[in-house]
Length: 600
Ligand code: GLN
Image (cartoon, rainbow, N blue to C red; front, side):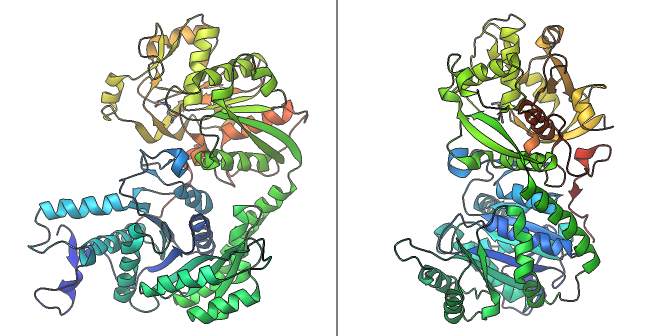
């Protein structure tokens, strides 16, 4: 087993051992602790938000944390998932397409994650099946236990070794009782046994119902599902009760009584006005100290560091609550029926809004219903527009009508990925006079395919015919709006997820008509940012990238900041003033704290 030893080689076991625990090279038992978050009663309780908030509190104290989401589905990544069903596909810097929770972790921890932080059943099973073909199981029949669970444990330990984390945060997708997640829970049971007491802290997130016909909180569904967790061999150390209102003492007592978890470790986690309030809520309730006690890390907190981190974070929350200038920004897209499809855009707008003291109302505009005739009426009260990423033909005409209208009527605009490509098409058609200009994604045989798949470029980039994914450098033109927004940096890094791009054959023509491509790939002619000069339009910006993915609460994304500022001016605020200074140095977008390097 390449670079791996197994637990059976470490201890005294029989020849036909039942143990199968591949250990990644360099793993030392006891060096890393684990916090595992289980969901009970139902999905949608905000496990990712809870887990990332708890991880943040420990990070504030000076501990190194590494999150991992274990996802039950058989897809190897989230690339092919429909955002209608699953919410947005989040893209990591290394190109991994993953669950939107990874976005929550990145924002909360201000840390770039990698493919090691996202694990699906598809990844686990393909690894096991590949290994079987290579004879890696030495004649054994390959079983869910111990082989598949062994691979899960190995993934967790690999993350611990690679990141040098003090604490690995494991979020188990789905709900206790789901068939597809059962083996993850089993793997955690084994892990806790192998690592020994005090190494794993199990946190059960549960839900307290409050039926309107009763008008009081009921704990029975929580009790029953916690029982199911215990039947799977996991005894929770901490129970966090999600609820609409603070969980009553009576309810917490019942839960404590039925689960043998001391009352002081049954916490209320009721609804609040922003996800960024939760770290402070956890601290206030004392969940952080409970976790540290359980893991024997009570002597680790660096309180000076924690106070400093808390201060900046609480300042953000105070500014969030104080936002006063009302502006309305429309999002013209296809997936407007499921807000989760635009989770990162909502976040990026919040960060930029807080930065300028703006209370941004987002309005969802279904592009399929927008036409040249109704667009003026529909956008009457809108101060700015975003056309987000998208795929396929549906709704394209509405997006074109929308972009033409905002361009001609000086309404601030930000185009993201597809919103960049459609802005190019609109400009080609209505300003350059290239009638019928389009993307080959929309019209395969059009007269002017200004957006196209360019296989020769893909080949140069070594990506075959696939999507261009992940972080890529963008060189900014001197004197452009985008380079102004980024301060001194001439080169930034943005994340991408696209197949099509501007055909270089049309660049000269588009630029001769006044469109400026102000951000390009360093070597190949891939257009990555476009803008119109300030004399022509107050704010017309678009990017082939997904800048929403790299916005952070304390470091809002400059393109979103520009849009919000322009929208405020449009709404009548004369000189919008920032409410804080940005932690911006040269090359800002490269500056996000990456996971700590391995410590050996
Ligand atoms: N459909 C476009 C492409 O594949 C845009 C993709 C996107 O918006 N993420 O290039």
